Length: 469
Image (cartoon, rainbow, N blue to C red):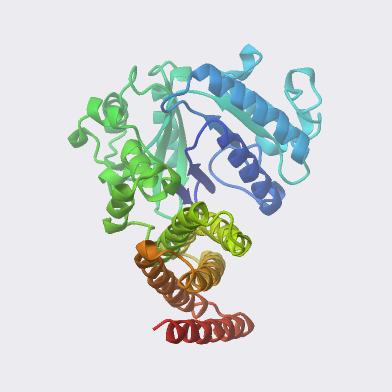
């Protein structure tokens, strides 16, 4: 749903949502990928951390309880330790001991300090070995309420001023309940920042935090340059704190958690759960991931469905005839094709989402540009493969419908004809979708292979079309 990162904190905050039955596996794969890519021995930044995947909080959004999130956190923690040999600590609502409820207690000493202290009795992990992973460190997994990461940037570069303000504001320093704060040096912006976590925005709303930081900054003769939200924010947090109090930089409705969740669900809702009206509505959306590829797959699936319907009627009428065996073979082909095309309609939507995500990803540095380019190439390859499968399967549907024309009852002949032309449109449309994608791949062998097969299929489609005119 969202990714936020910056060079000063040197940290990525990734927000994703999902069903309780599957989101744990998503988190585990993220932990594994981070362990593969990130070496904490080569890492430093303004934000405390103990691991490549520093913290994994599970947050109840809707139709799930905190107790279920606690159970999920403990399952993921145990499996992460087993699968990756990473020590795991449980925190917040999932904590098994009082001194680990607060995340800062687990992070004490960070990666370097934990490496020296992990075998001490008070620092033995909840899961995994009592030794830090040599490059990926350790991970904290927990369950908690929605946390707002809220930063206030000072109109000065004196980080000591930010640290003094943070100490006054945070609860552990005698300040506001449900507020954690620290001072950070934003070297890239030549500003000092009071970086905060608001752990219960209903009890301690954003505007009260802003007002106290501003009051403290005034005592140091420092102005507020602006404030920012890291990641997404619940709508209710903004309902409580009027926007004009906050001076949030680059704020827009797309930063509101519920808005982004609805947008994501609208783009990626499984096609199996939609009716034709919903499908058409999704295609109409300007930012939809349901484009030509999904439409061609649907056209092919409709052609196969028509063929299956016609075959069912024909077999019932001619159950004892010799041609029943041949009709059963066609029925098997159409049933398999229908399942593949139904799946392809959804997979094309995901493939196109991958292309859009790669196109929209950040490219501030040369390294990020390279990563973006690799992701874009992978997305185009995947989109090509899905489209070519749709073309191949639609051609098989076309073959079956072509042969059925001469054996079906005249009352359903028009249905076969409609299916034939739908399958032809699906195959031709899929080849066009594939062409657009494989020509974007910077790999001559890949382009050559798909160009050759596309030309072969176009020739076969032309022959079938001419023979059925």
